Length: 274
Image (tube, rainbow, N blue to C red; front, side, top):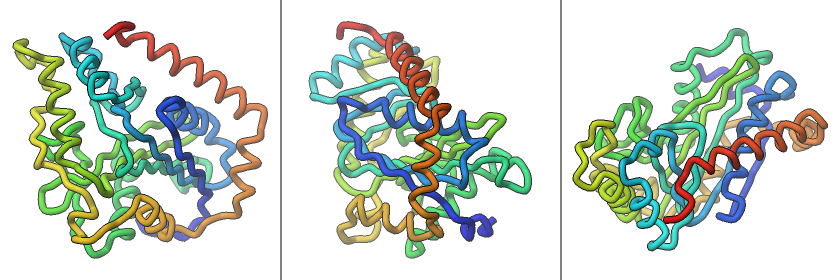
């Protein structure tokens, strides 16, 4: 499983602002669509402040306008993504990291579990002093089978998308900051969205203490930049020109434009006025 770490990997970093918050998923989708011409596997880092990223399932909240109004009152931005099912927080202490695996560079098309395990291997290598395991943390926000946890507390979540050309495994990692407040925010979001309606959609019953940060576990400050460097150091990085040349191809630029239209259209599913 660790053999893939010896392959050259390209890197792409995007520090984003709320005004261009859908850009990360525009690039994710466009890169995945063009994985058949990716020259190497790709490591994609991005950060985004003051935003709640909604999952497709969140559209089913019976009082979604009230839940979105709560976010607006707390001066938070939000948008709807096309991967993963439920809401997550992105702010100054959160690092997002995606790994793209082009199938043409693999001995075989990875299974879903194999692709997830590669990301887990990377996190464990980057933070060897932590006893990192996976398994659903039921009372976290956006719980899933491959929740990244230490001693039962979640520090990150993983989702995955794939097509005939390749796959991408996407990680959000709680590096530092007030994770208790993040949990309280998402708890309040679902409380406002459900109100007295029975929770027949199985939205998570969020316990804020179910999650923590890497910094708190280490017992010392850890910046997002330092966490990114730890993840980066696990790999052998390819020359920066590799991804630049890929990103200049007319086919990729067209895909970016197509995905921008598609994800912008997706936002129209959310209530206009809250």
